[in-house]
Length: 236
Ligand code: C5P
Image (cartoon, rainbow, N blue to C red; front, side, top):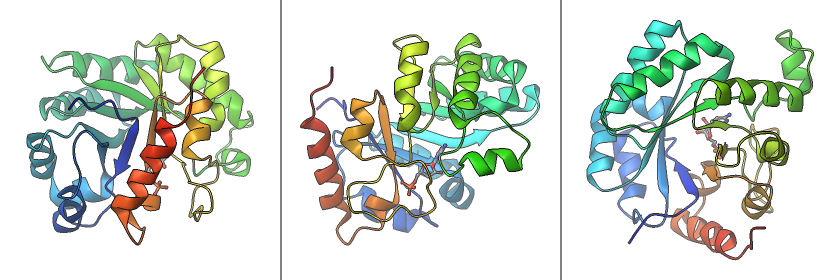
């Protein structure tokens, strides 16, 4: 069965055993999987390769942010693993973004390359703290335009900014949205949150969801409920 799912499950686990305990109950048609800094640092590329061998599409969420040459090489190495999507920080600037794209383009397998705009755990106060006076919306739009101009495939943003970005950017520009919380679920450390169906209605291309699934009493039921909620909405 083809994997058209818009749900990306964030495998935020400390080790391979815990991650595989969940993965072994999942079908690749139900969701895509995200391997982030915690799991990748603990397990290395071997786990990514194992998940790909199980036919899962993998978003390698390492959010590279470094000098252009280093980011280009890291992106090339990540692409060589066969991942479906990978990311960098848009705030690394246009030279770094173009270098990242060149790194990805060196491999025959060309994953989606997306740029993180403003982390969904950040709010206006957090931006001010690091010297950015722009509003969250303006900063997200500025970084998303930079990413589009550099030729990237999309951005990571909150669904709260998806409508604005849909209006102002190319229609096929991917909007990958973390900070998703089903109704009545703990917000944790996320600041800018919306429900799965709201996110899709606002224009999100993919939903990144971690703790509402991984910390649920029954993760599979939680995932299935989210997928059902997503398939029930009509997109305009
Ligand atoms: O558990 P929760 O659903 O909050 O997990 C969100 C996931 O999305 C985490 O793995 C986090 O690293 C990632 N993420 C994020 N905000 C971004 C980019 C990625 O929360 N801007």
